[in-house]
Length: 163
Image 1: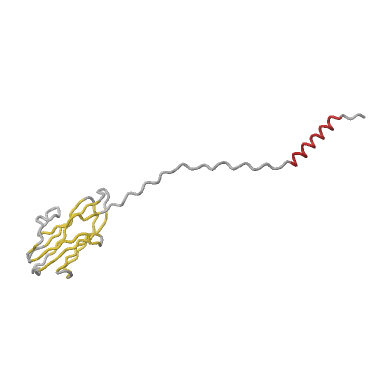
Image 2: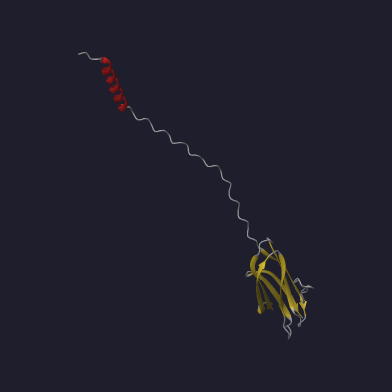
């Protein structure tokens, strides 16, 4: 019987290749793909500041007009006068109403409380608010002042005299 040497040679070559492949050293792992750097983001715009209300002026007088403004500013009153304080306010954002409180604290000779009146408001744009004190039997002569408070903080003070 004759054997064919080609299949035996092929089998030997195949076995040799497999043996070499099994002994082959591991190749280093492929480096990880580069991490994508996110595009720089623009910071979110800062929130708009809240609207604020400011007391711009306080005038004293004996009467106010239809717009709550003192008709004739004065600092000296008679003992029988009604005394008005007209408080002008403005809002930093006329389109956004702001809630708040105005208070008029009236004192005599430094520390004697005459009256304190507060009003809650929705402030929008500009406006005037008036406060009034009166004493039908007459004011004692002397020095007085009115402090205007906005949300509990004194923002304006006016001194006046009764003669």
